[in-house]
Length: 548
Image 1 (cartoon, rainbow, N blue to C red):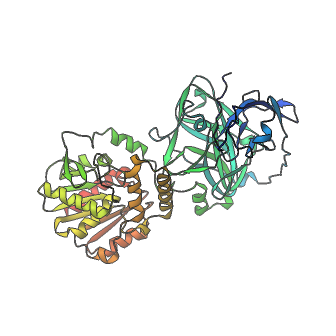
Image 2: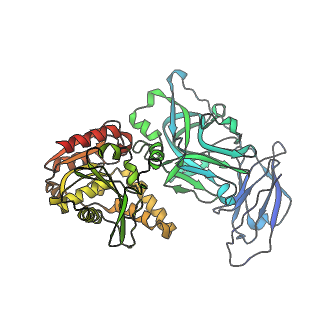
């Protein structure tokens, strides 16, 4: 068998000669080897995994002698020993004691139980969690987890993993774990026995691998985490679907758990829940950690927009050079000018469902906001919505347009409001979709998500992510449009939001109320992604509003 490479970290000013310690992990009760045991250094991203016969080798060179070496596997008492003591003997046998199982009788009537599914269900192929043993071993042998919250006692029946693609020269060995929660992170593994799987292509049905754990009798309540870990190298790659705007967790060996704020793997579970204990609030809590009900999976729309050709159409595209920016835009159709302004981190292609419809009646000018899409920004200043509005005014001036209409989505809608305030004589009508007037108008869950995202970006401090940091910062710090400011807007404004929007509904209603000539429409069964989800309805509303 091909041995797993081991890892080491230099943690002291002095160093040791190379010291590789080998051994075998054995069950003390059964006197049999324990396979695929995780062996690592406490609080460090260093370690290895034993093979199918319990054999392992770990390089302890240069490690702090006072650090603890840990060996843990479900069903056995954890083993810990200082690195100093562990170094003293090679080819050693590590005996693990089986845990004493206290089986408690669960007396719940079957007729009171109802089937539920919680977690991340996306099957996208554009946002992926990639597993490849050719990467660094501490990454490949790391562990990822997703948080759940069961308000009432529930039994896990199946653990589902949505797999976008699978390539392997052999069955892929995986371990499943269920963790309790402490201080918002995974804590102790609550399983009484190991759950490992040798995954093959034929086990994946319709993009999902379903693991039946009903016989393991796993009961949960409160916050808990479902974790997966790959244990053995293979030639190939597995891509697991992932959901944006969800928070996942990751660690390497026995290192600290860290939040992954950008996306989370598509892990979902089938459970049996006490029907009498459920209500809508409990259901929301059980779905997971944050934005599942606020931002839908839009991967199918993103893939379609990428294939549309918009945003990279040379025959319709052009640049305008302004201070610190080359602003890219595309023009379609003839008639009264209508500017389409995308949301944060978006681009022209996001309006792929609006451009062909609206350009039949209007001269549609679609713009990549500076620092996004194909537009650049060479300054080192923070972005502002007033700056974005100034850019639109400069582009309108270049095109010789004295009065324009604006349809802005999210950040684009905020830019439209700032344009209405600063350049009232140049605005005809405004459609603001999912816009907020000040940061407090955004759902706290999204705000917390963005704060975590900014924290990660600041820690990474990568120059290539400077624009990304600025785009997160502008959402957290701006805009600052008061009720008094809104009352000054005299242009007709159509205010739109979804009933499940990340913009609080009372905030959207306030904006429409304070603007003298505003109309309000709340879309049913819609999130913040209205131009994607409700394209036909939105197009009709824009045409009707501008045609009045």
